[in-house]
Amino acid sequence: MKDSTGSYWHEKSVLVTGGTGLVGSWLVKRLLDDGANVTCLILDFDSQSELIRSGNINKVSTISGNLSSLTTVRRAVFQNECSTIFHLGAQTIVGTALLDPVQTFESNIQGTWNVLEAARNSGGLVTKVLIASSDKAYGSVKSLPYHEDMPLQGTGPYDVSKSCADLLSAAYAKTYGVPLVIARCGNIYGGGDLNWNRIVPGTIRSLLSGKRPLIRSDGLSVRDYIYIEDAVAAYLSMARGLEDSRIVGEAFNFSREEPLTVLEIYEQVCESVMGGYVEPQVLNIANHEILSQFLSSEKAREQLGWKSEYSLKEGMKRTVDWYKDFFGTEGNR
Image (cartoon, rainbow, N blue to C red; front, side):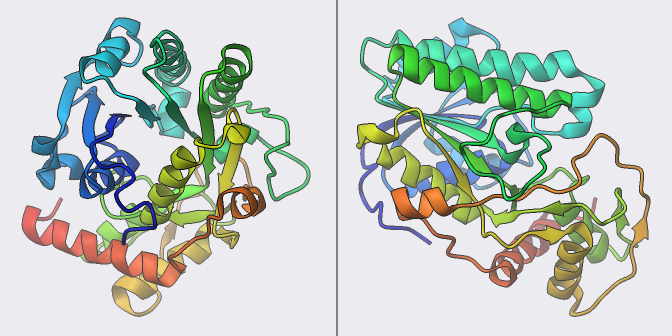
């Protein structure tokens, strides 16, 4: 579903880092639908990525390389004279960050300052930068929901990487005038997420293959869940909002403001796939995760006019339909 951006992006030159990821693939699709000229900075050519499966990879320019290389990032910006950057590229898995914190810091922190440096030294070419962050940047707090004026105090490697990237971004906006905004979403779900350790895609795959689903935690952790097309609409709304200099350097939360436990989101997945509940195997082995995280979107509603368009039921139905098609055409995994 398109929002009111219409032809705003028509013939605009846009760079998307992390274009093969869940959000990147859907964002590229929307930008192409709106007539943008899209360049993607890609680390790995993942044949199962929706960017590639959809054929959209053939409609964009691609730069292969690592975000940790400033030379590569600058080439991605300047080769096609990109005036807008959607910086989505990151190491996004909490468990991987625990096992390999240095690689996570290089990708998430160094990668972000390289994007910021490229924008700062673009000679005015880059006029819009969106930094895709996360609710994890806030860390653990005593009072929820998260509001944008709360301090950033991540403690685990992944959370710290997001806190640092956000602070770097705010510094570049305030010190150098880099025209950027920061998006903080809860857990984004939707078709195309192939990280099977996540509750939504992992449960869908298990149910469709006739296996008993696994829950890694105790099922009591509380999170926000936002459908992928809502997240993409939020990113586009923020980038357009940079026409107003008053939001430069600002962060915005995006959420349906309906926090759920893992068990509650699991029940919704079961209902969408099977029409009823399937008893899971609760492993209770997840470590170093914050018990409760959810966001207030009041600022985004008031300053950007943003609101979620998809209910959990509708978003989950669209997600399940995507995976049914995926497994039907690609075979079981």
